[in-house]
Length: 153
Image: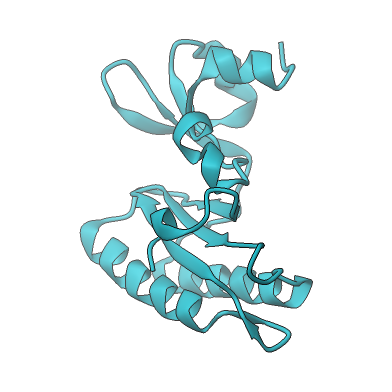
């Protein structure tokens, strides 16, 4: 199952990579993530879930909570998986001090989060989106808009 097949109100978890993923890594990650999502359960109840690489910088997990609720233990399993995948690929998926930014030339760079206000015309890939329905409108956003929406200016 793909994330796009899930109910739009599904819960979403995003993990940003510390570097761009290459095609081989993306293929391998998608295989691992798909296998995990197919077997993901919470207290014995199968979760209607999907997990995949969104772009060369993010992996995502989504669960349709209307079918079964993801418990703390099931969420911990997904976090352990991401940590293990990161170790295997030598990638940190848990550094929130930097964020991926895209400039007007569509160049993507990792910048310190504390410096995003220096690039108001750039876009950021927002790792805090937590609902599948918000992914199209709130994942890649102009920094100036992000700062205003989150009351950071």
